[in-house]
Image (tube, rainbow, N blue to C red; front, top):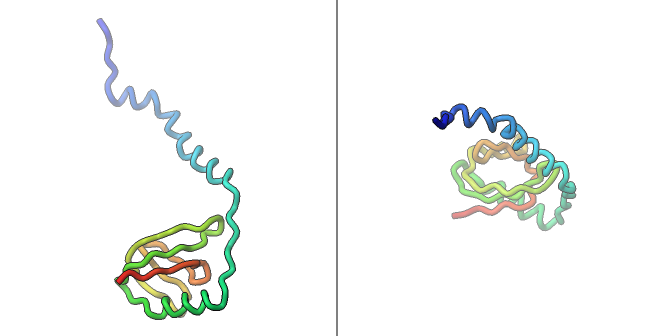
Length: 107
């Protein structure tokens, strides 16, 4: 008579390998070369500042920003614009104005 494993027993059998998944992702991130921060021109800074000044909560935007290692794109609704603290919050992510490379407002 063949013994069948329960789903839980089967899952437990492979659990040691599941822990490596996050480790593999971390290794891949470390192996990637660090992307250099791009210095914006005066015109680009001026345009970015105009866009930031026009933002209000609820606006739908696409932002390309520097994370300290690479540029990341985020698309979502503005939750808050902190002009005194020079940052904006989109979908729970707080992004400093100085880290923004591109900001597109969707009407």
